[in-house]
Length: 471
Image (cartoon, rainbow, N blue to C red; front, side, top):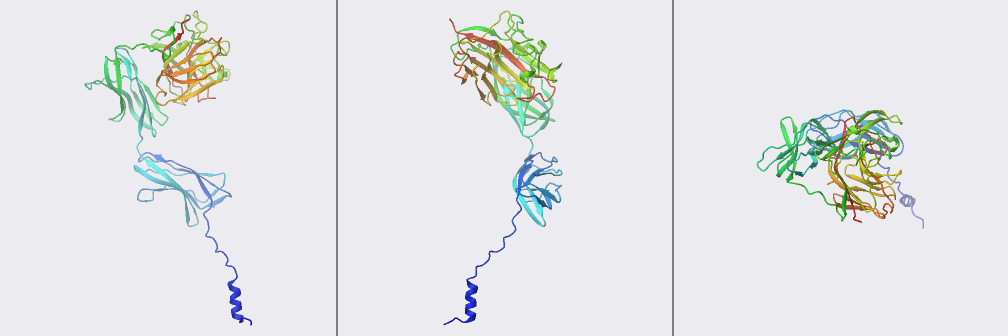
């Protein structure tokens, strides 16, 4: 029996599939690539920069800006949003107008608007606070009674900060002021750091409190203190291994003996004798770049008057080598050579102790570049071995560091502050010998940055010694 027509039509309608509802319009695919700043100084105008790009096709928005909210969700947006803007995969960058904020922590985000709909991009924290000055290093911690010594303070700041004075304070047990002379005035301390080296002074035997400080207006800010121990005498350091007889002893208590022990104006390691632009060096050797005082030899590099073969301006700087001398001293397998020196600061500085003879025979006790402030390069250039040694507590601009190498026919050992840090297991070969070179080079900018200004660059050494096994 057939169903009634109305029932049949209803049954037919029930089996017809339902169409899916139309999707709500999705947010256009725009990606935030960067947003700055993440920090600012209180009550100091700052602009924001927002970089965005679309993920596929170009998209036109009616407004693009940077929003800011405080802890109470109060609107503190950066002024100067962009009007109708086309954002493509290649990207678009907006720099707002400036505004200032009170000290505090804020939520910061990019946004765009299409019609009346706003789309927020990922948020981040904007911290508004006064810069924090951090002490990176303070030396010396040891000195000899009644012997002049300089102080070195290395600092940086979370943001650039102008201070009126920087110095190093010293107090005895009775809190008597015995500060290092030679403070620095009108100093800008930035995240990349600042190094102060004071004028020298001496102290009686005893124990002192030593600290860095800076002054803004009439307000002094003391940095963390250290103990400065001043003893009657210092026993010359012994090598960290049984090393035999001391066969080369330069303590720089007097100017180097030129012609007898040292040569200071040429080396066969330099293509033109006194300069070598082919090795990324701006060096032009000048005896006047060397000076001896207070038991140390200082290498001082300054912009020079000569033009190098590649057209770059030279820098006058210093080098000492045992090559071309009456003594003609050379190191050989079994020797232990150690230098103690103060690492320099400033882009372009490139101090090193190395060996050279017959166009090679090079072992680098160390190379140092302040753009890698906590790293020493230790290299065997004869048999292609080496390492990058890093120690933020002992290696930094202004630090005094002892660096030694025990040369061996089949293995070289490197020691930093008398601690074994690297063995190359390749050595020099049994018939190796070479002259010593101690110098301050200046980088030309290919491998490491060249000097960023014309300020003098200095490095200092207070001894270079070689021990040799008894035969």
